[in-house]
Length: 447
Image 1 (spheres, rainbow, N blue to C red):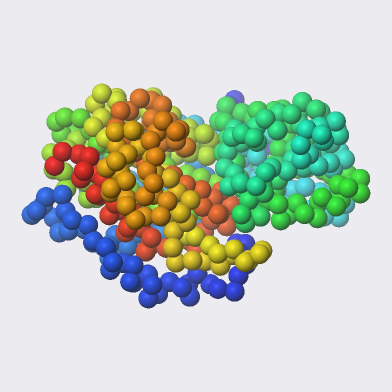
Image 2 (spheres, rainbow, N blue to C red; image 1 turned 30 degrees about the vertical axis):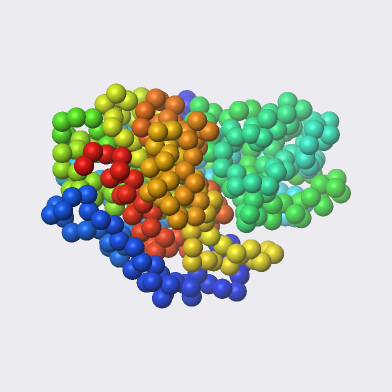
């Protein structure tokens, strides 16, 4: 081990069976108008859907987008070729990101060996693991039982995504202070799967090993805990820091800049999480230089997102145009065009519609034009002022003081699950969103 300083969907209906004619109908239903006559052919829904399909096929081939890994590096190179082809001067901004490549990651109870997701930044256990009585923590009444235990910390139901979020972090610290030998977080979410949690790149908040399992895998463990079973958590592998890079592009023209940003890294394939943002980014960055021939443009595709927006922090600190030199910032965050699902008890059936648990948010003066531009898009039609607080990298942009900014973010049902694969997206969901983005940009930038 090296150290340094610092899918499971059940249902009788297959997604592919729903796709054909409905997808074609959606593609023909909407077209955007160009920013100015005579500059380029009008963007169309069919064209945007085709671009999204190509983007999704490429993303699926990268397989794993963890920061600094082979998939993340390949995705960055692919995006770099796209930006160069559309006239951007491109630079890579390198930085160091944590990583962990597991050898063994499991919870052993009796003869059972339950796979777990190591919680970053990972505290390894050694090959013999960390052992103790398996005990369940649901609320403060269980705290006295935690001394020396391997704690199953049951989280409330939610689409969990970040260790630092409340009520997760407070509970982790309570259990650790009570003397637990190790913590296994149980993410109780809409699919029952293990949900990887974003983490502070500086290190873990408590000095004991932690991992994650989903509520489905935890069910048999609850009975074993009641019977007084002992458990061993084993987390071994290669850990430390490795290089990653942000990809920045620019077109230099006079005046303040339009900025477009999206993350590209995450815990695994990330198709529903990252796919819509990357597809829309490619569509917009091809369109904007032609639609606004006098507009200065800066764009960025960040890595390190799963480490509390690490790449975004770095670019904001050293690379982004200052707030006073920025006319408008458009951020394309997580999951804003991922598939929705019907729930049939323990089964999930794919729908030919986007998950409406997605948020559109902007600085207060932008709310009215955003509501107009996104009217009729479930979830996105209700634009919110940024004074309510934004998630992810849009929040970082707003806290940095950019006066005119908006973006989208969401957490679909498979957000941060290992099964967030190509089944969780459909290219037909992209054209309504990119048409609305064009309408918004046209309304908010001088023509």
